[in-house]
Length: 260
Length: 154
Image 1 (cartoon, each protein chain N blue to C red):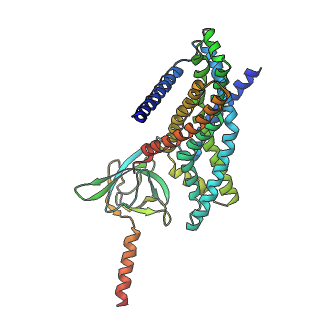
Image 2: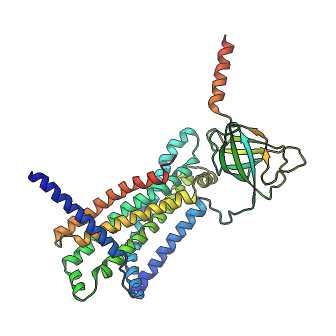
Image 3: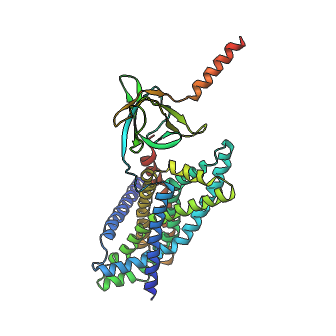
């Protein structure tokens, strides 16, 4: 009897947390500082720390993933004598799947964890409550710019990831493995469509960016304000964020590419 | 000074993102900005199109002169009705030309090839090509070959 009660209580707790997170999301979207200049300044600062500082990891990992895809694809396609199709394989797998997902996973690890830790530390050192004391809404001043910067950055990073992956794959397959350059590009251009492949990939990246940044800022805002609590919240950001990305990716892929 | 620098970097970041989008659009998907070329529509009925898809290319002498707009099933004749767009500069295709479903390479994509006829009248918007050749289906060929081989052994 008691265990059923506990189960119900934990369900209620969970529902409450979901509700709090939802309200938090809505509040942080519509609460940029009122003065335009100030909000732009805050946003630029966050765009720098979330986006620009993630550039190196995105470009490097994109290039390596493109190179590995080319090598793997080439070794199989060469058996059928259709090495040129490596361009098609590279572009489709990057644009549709790998670049949104891998960028979002890297983003959760690189930018999401730092957002959580930063906000959590602000809470632990009572900066958030001193904002409130000064009559400044911390949601408006601290959370909203970070949230919006995260949502803007991830799709851009995903585009850069795709471009860098395709250039890396081109390097390996054309310069090293000797696939004919013209056939590489033409097989790619024949099979990639702007609306179904590039735009759908971008929509995926946008969905991931909302979810990951939401989880990151919420975990930071709601963490237990101790050093242990911040550590746990950071771990939760990465774990929950990655799981959410992979689960959401399945749903989105089924909706976008599932109709045969 | 610090804030100026970060603004510059954010500007570079966004420009880089836009550049990546343009690169993907032009180089990877082959999106042409002047894609609204003048075209006219021609239809043809096939017994079997075997894997031809819309947006497949229509070619004369191997050069793409148009693309397939839509493929529907003609209920009355039990045939595939293929509607295609042909560039309006190519306005000198005789009406008795024949059209065939071809494959690029052994396993490549299906496309349509027009062989030029000898009539004085030319195809116009809405006209139909009557001389059609269906796709070469590999399975049918193989089964024909097998049955023939069986006969000759007897």
